[in-house]
Amino acid sequence: MTEQTERSLAEPSRTDPLPHPDQAGAAPAAAAATDGTTGADTAAATGDGASGGTRSGPAAGASGTAVDVEPEPEPEPPRPAAGLRGPLAADRTPVNTGTPVLPHATPPPLGEPRPLGETRTWPRDFTDRLTAPLPGVRALARIARDGKLRPAPEALREIQELPFAPGPMPATGLTTVALTWAGHASWIIRIGGLTVLTDPVWSRKILGTPARVTPVGVRWEDLPDIDAVVISHNHYDHLDAPTLKRLPRETPLLLPAGLAPWARRRGFTQVTDLDWWEAVELPAPGGPVRFDFVPAHHWSKRTLTDTCRSLWGGWVLTAPDGRRVHFAGDTGYGHWFEEIGRRYVGIDLALLPIGAYDPRWMLRPVHTDPEEAVRACRDLGARVLVPMHWSTFLLSAEAPMEPLHRVRAAWAAAGRPRDDLWDLPVGASRVLGER
Image (cartoon, rainbow, N blue to C red; front, side):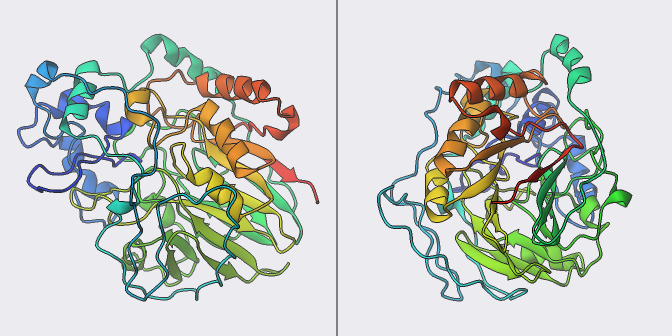
């Protein structure tokens, strides 16, 4: 998410991207740059390894006159845009639609897994998958004026309360489903005898953000052999090139549509990128594990010129015995949760974001708050909510401990069993019982 920056004003007819809290927080500094780019953003190309791109500053297009710009009205929660339809891939993959299916409709059968490592041709961009408009220059000017994208100084005292309890990862077998939280959206998932990393970020600092406020929950040298990596989207706090460089180049990478060239340029040899509702299977000692790429309410951007050039989404991992884990990646609240739950019945664990949500007028379309995460868990039909995307990087204005307090209160208010809220400390693990 950290590379969400303003699209160049020289690119007419394109949608201006939503500012990421990590960049918008530096808006006053950005306003001093005549081209809308901060010095740190100019150096961003080196922060991505061999990305070769630069990013605009958080307030690109917002000048010193930003204080004279009227604020935008509070947006409604994200809703599907009328007539949204996914593009038809050049290999004639069936069209994905952004129009929600009525809840009572019979869910379509899951598609056959696609071949691993296939090379595909995708549309130029995926802007028609957006479920909310991306605010433009006026929103960025408002952020520059308000300066509300970091916790208040007095709230920073809560950092010392953030839960951090690293411990040994549990012993696992062929039928074990277990989670270990490394922090943010980085999980070690043990399923069907495989070890899977989600959005791995082991860096102390990522581009455009303050350093981690809690250490990584698992030392890299303590990780077991990694059988696969799943990526939700290309924002820097979810796709961290320095971390991926630590992996053997033959590690299978499962990516959103349009990201395979990025990975292949970095030497990875087993790369598969998927559209929404597509899947692959990986062989595992306990039988094949299925990985389905599913929609999310978010967007993508990594450089000045690639807004929505790759897709974004979450993953549903299905063990050989049918147990399911939904990793939502980065998302706002919206209709996709019900549709995912309709298609993938019996989700056991829902890994959902609960942080980086304040101010709501800007972040509601792309980040669930704690109450929305509880609603999303219900919509998914999932038994267990596993909060994430908090307690690691301070990306927005809420107090560090607020997401945890609010998700516990919302879970209790919903009448859900306390044992089904896995609010783990960074570094902790938990094993899902057998069905």
